Image (tube, rainbow, N blue to C red; front, side, top):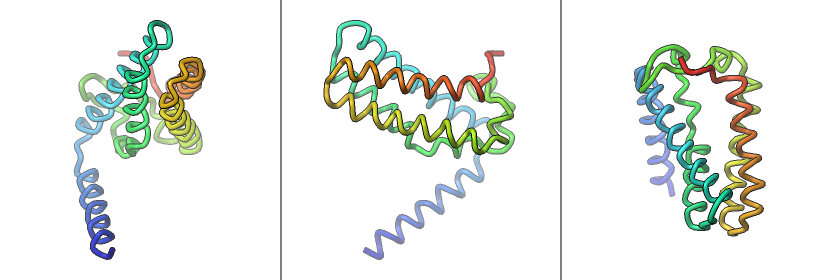
Length: 152
């Protein structure tokens, strides 16, 4: 058991030092990539709840969203990454870096709704997925409204 704990501590140390050395542009690219993947997964679910429902596809997409929600993406908001370019100019508003309480609230809401969507998707109940998908969409919108600017 001590070996597992040591490996976990070493892994966290290496990950922490890797983030400390991360270039702003790389942090922006990584988070833009994650959000693009999440957007693709949201579109897959939307297509299923509005058209022919495929439980397996919804589960796959919901699991991707859940994984991203629980990935610790907050670490990609490194100092200085409110400006700059990843794949495109960042759209994050400076308020994301100063409104810790508000950011914490929307992040917790997003994580909660993403985790619940994965649970509901596993049931195969299309109506329940549609309702939960709406809650997740509202959580996403809350963050976009306060912390994401328009395309430049």
